[in-house]
Length: 200
Image 1 (cartoon, rainbow, N blue to C red):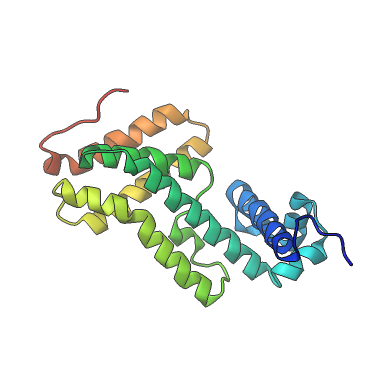
Image 2: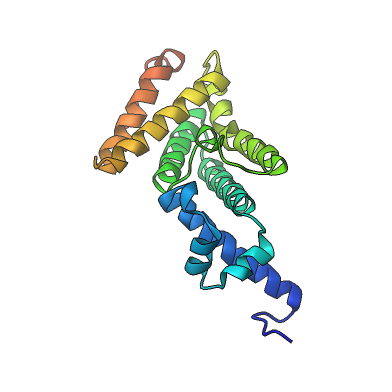
């Protein structure tokens, strides 16, 4: 009988699947979807490539698992970030901070993943996760009186992605974070009666 690394075979398979997904998510965040191959994931996870194929029979399935997990983690992170906020302004601030951190960690917007060869059922789940991801932002903007909260949310997330790209080109993250907040503040200022972000 093959050696297992958990009390039961079911737990062993769950453990190995989790290790594979963890390695795939790390590669996706650090190097992009092109780096997520069975060979690279197997090397990072310390497994044989055949073990990866046992759980994910194609590169597309492996990328899909990584993308789904990336979105699930981002949703959980943003939910935690806004949970302790008490006003729409505080929730918007918390969302921007958390989403900027996610972008710096490698989370990619949905549009950047649209060309990936993911199974259709995975794409449907990712679209649903993306909707859940932006929901706190849309609600905060609506509460602040923004006329088109959903459309504005898409623009705000575009600003966050652009900020992360600036950091990637060598600008200091604290400076860019402030720039992102100031830009968003000016964008929604009419709805906020001239509010500006408080200095940390």
